[in-house]
Image 1 (cartoon, rainbow, N blue to C red):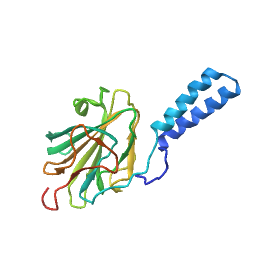
Image 2: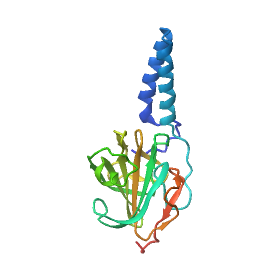
Image 3: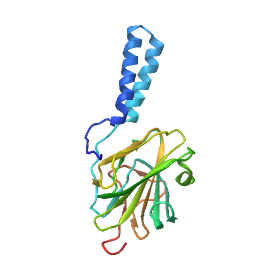
Image 4: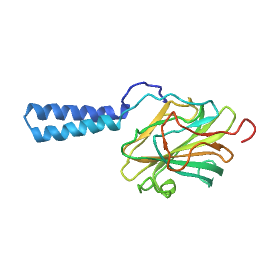
Length: 220
């Protein structure tokens, strides 16, 4: 499932927050002030981490939106031998513990395939995380039959990747398609001749920042 929910809080965090509230109320009732302070900090962090701010997609259908909040750590031409099996423009985005972790659809299209690969949990800001870490790829075909791959990559602390869509789902740019808990990375593979609008080191916002523009129909 892909969601347009305007909820200010990611649904994956609801059970965690609920547990935090229960323990906080119980410790307050027992006058366990140190425990209450610890649970209050835990609850505040959970609310902060699972926040889901409104985002307004920018640009047009050929403009590729960032799928994640974070910092651009890679922008280069590579041969993708795992997902698209061709020369691609690869953009890597590192999400720190303090970034919004809700992931959003970069382009409107249909889910062509979903590929999960188990792996390691090295620091997600390293390039080798793209090859070695646990990851889940969402391969999207646009209405112009252009294929792009959005890869959710677990990090040093992250241990759970969430991806809602199934193969055949029609998804719209800017909508929520999943998240990765507690620090991670997203890589996006685009046609080699896409026009890039960002640079390494730049901060981007999921569902708003335009990373690149796809080549026009017939150019891919």
